Length: 91
Image 1: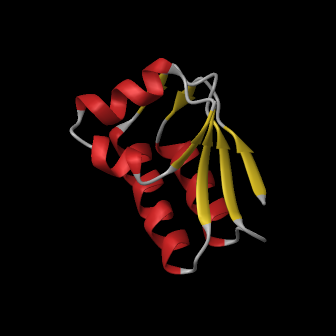
Image 2: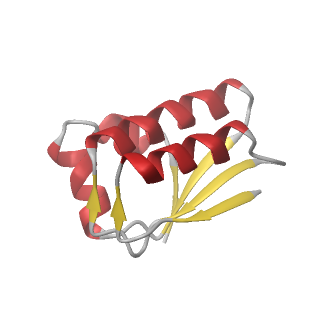
């Protein structure tokens, strides 16, 4: 499983890293360690959703490890709760 530790501000630059990690994820998939995230841009959120769909099509899993309250709130505030619920969440 590939792991990526997300910084406090997840923006378009970090979205590129998420995409790259998702496209080359080894083994069972990708784990995003999201406990330090304070802000999540729309572009990054959309990239996470796209990577989750890409991995699911290959029978791999996107795991969110300890997503911070602001991380979760970004999905809720933009109406993507259903997409968030499609991801594996580990607390």
